[in-house]
Image 1 (cartoon, rainbow, N blue to C red):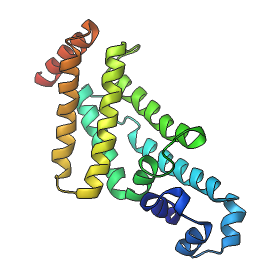
Image 2 (cartoon, rainbow, N blue to C red; image 1 turned 90 degrees about the vertical axis):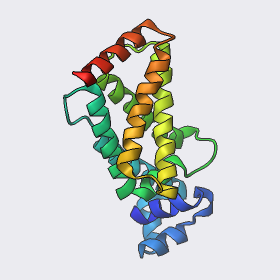
Image 3 (cartoon, rainbow, N blue to C red; image 1 turned 180 degrees about the vertical axis):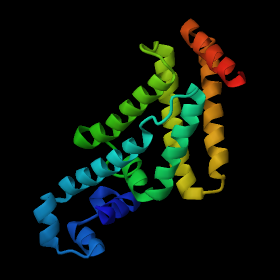
Image 4 (tube, rainbow, N blue to C red; image 1 turned 135 degrees about the vertical axis):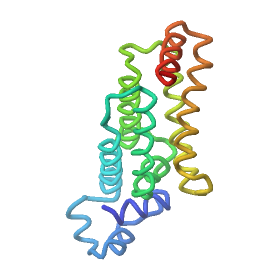
Length: 195
């Protein structure tokens, strides 16, 4: 699976053959077909593996202040990005432009679960449309920051992680101008950080 993730992270799935994967894994073509059935099944299995690894890292481990939990989650997220660069890149960058079907479901499933984790950390049961949009925008920013960091590595990880927490605060601050519930959440988060 590692060899497949590595290949899929560097090239579009359409440009990777079963022979490429077999060669990279030091296995026979027949063995790859035996276990995965074909390239599409292998690609889906590789993405599922990457998604499961990432999600296991993101499960909340603390019960502290929401922004501290967010910072801790970002550290674990970027640990995954750094340790499993191929899986992360394949999960977010690889594959067809149209992410419909099973592949789209894998990626969207990770995003939905990440959204629910952040919602839980923020102690929000039913987010308003403004908060939902804000959190989804932040998740997209974190994904983009992870891909950019892998490509350039010209920002120290702790700086990037702190910047992304500050980005969340800034987004919530702007959203607070449009939604009373977000304003209360924003004020609570700021007060908790000062206390």
